[in-house]
Amino acid sequence: MKTIVILISGRGSNMEALIAARDAGQLPVYIAAVISNRPDAKGLVTAEKAGIATRCLDHKAYADRAAFDAALADCIDVFAPDLVVLAGFMRILTPGFVRQYEGCLLNIHPSLLPAFPGLDTHQRALAEGVRIHGCTVHFVTAELDHGPVIIQAAVPVHADDDETRLAARVLAQEHLIYPQAVRWFVEERICLEDGRVRLSGELHGDDRLVAPALH
Ligand code: GRF
Image 1: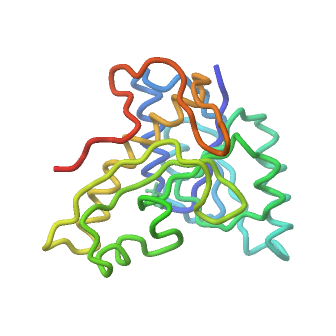
Image 2 (image 1 turned 30 degrees about the vertical axis):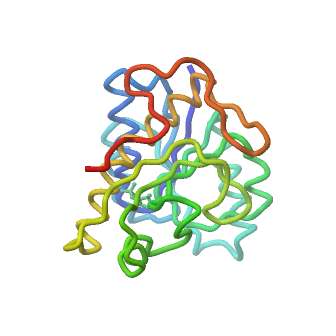
């Protein structure tokens, strides 16, 4: 069974979705640890309750980004994961760190990349008046919120949406697509060809490259 480490900064609902999928027998992984860069991350409590090892590395205690990333890598490597899963980990990672985990570092971003990289994605989607919004699971590259796309889910933007309603609609999809992407990874069905993701094997059951949430 593959080993994963999950990195969080706050609420940890995507982490919870991964734990729930594992508990439901839909995600054959060993979750070795949950690591947060914020001591007050709510997700740390959730992980502890689930019996998962937790670590906190407060980024404020490090001189610079490189020093934090080096300590983070040391902390991760103790658990010898096959995959590192960024689940609401709100830190820009140094190119050196990203290179170290190239091909085994995933992120979820609350927009249909390459649209709206960065912060405040829902607010920006509303301001632009887009009709379709969503979320993306992708491999992490040195460029922020960029990198080969594994799966996306699309949701409609309604005329009377506010940021909270739109965020909730997207988040519900995040909780579906992240466990699925991680499952594909641990089943070794994902490969990279010319910087793009190819999924091997038959699509079956819930396997979909785009989650059909346009309703
Ligand atoms: C999610 O919307 C995720 O896409 C983004 O930050 C949020 C984290 O939520 N990167 P949670 O901590 O997983 O609940």
